[in-house]
Length: 332
Image 1 (cartoon, rainbow, N blue to C red):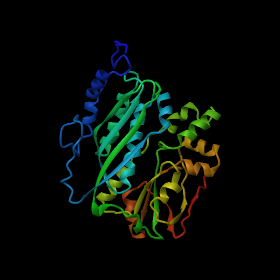
Image 2 (spheres, one colour; image 1 turned 180 degrees about the horizontal axis):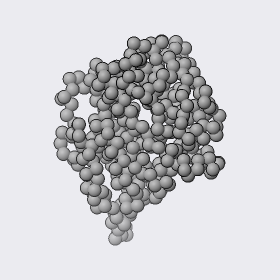
Image 3 (spheres, rainbow, N blue to C red; image 1 turned 120 degrees about the horizontal axis):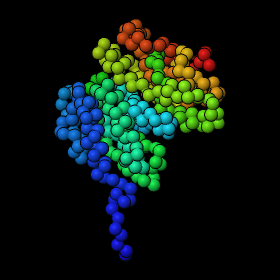
Image 4 (spheres, rainbow, N blue to C red; image 1 turned 180 degrees about the vertical axis):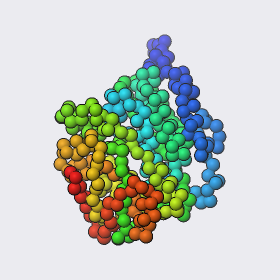
């Protein structure tokens, strides 16, 4: 066996730089410890969180990423948006159960720690976490030369939410005649970008430069809406986060073999409208959120109180006995 004078750094992995990075992001991480705090100090091998303030705590967990949107975000120098997207794609999922997010972990896979804009991504991530009272409890930054392309960051997020057992939503409570409300999205959020990239490749003029910000708008985090309902004593029958697969696939997950008749309001995001117009309408409904990122089912008796609590809520339709979800898009 030939002895080689090589170090981990010579192989492309700089653990000292990685350690420096952890120190650099400490201040940004601290902004996430406001309402909730870790039980022990940050930086241990595992993070601890005290559940004793809850009487009957139930843990809700979710895992998601940013998908191929990251390629366009890196190309257009918008890593902060990737951080917000990572929070939104995960936190929104636990919010659907009526749980509040408390802990977040991130995974970042990169080619080279010096060239990747990790600090800027973490800046966007920690600001979004601070806005929803969720602690950045830890994570992993993996430097993988030869596996991850130098112009890409691989991102995954993991969130832990907590709710009282009595507060968990039960989709079986949804009844025929219940009202469906929608909260607008910021845009496409972080789903459908494999299709977006293909459409842009086929037609380079489809999304002009002046619409890139609209195309890559960050995922909206629906924490304020869920918290406002909780503070107002409103317990909806169900909530859905509209991601990949669009309204039909995601809304069906909570309907328990029921259906809905829905009419969507005009989607005012100009980049999204160009994408919808470029493909058959059914393909767009399947791939995109069509301007509605969050859906809420309430009883008729809850309708006025919910609309008063959530001024942006739009009445989309009603729950039906038929399992079919009919989606009318009069503006397309």
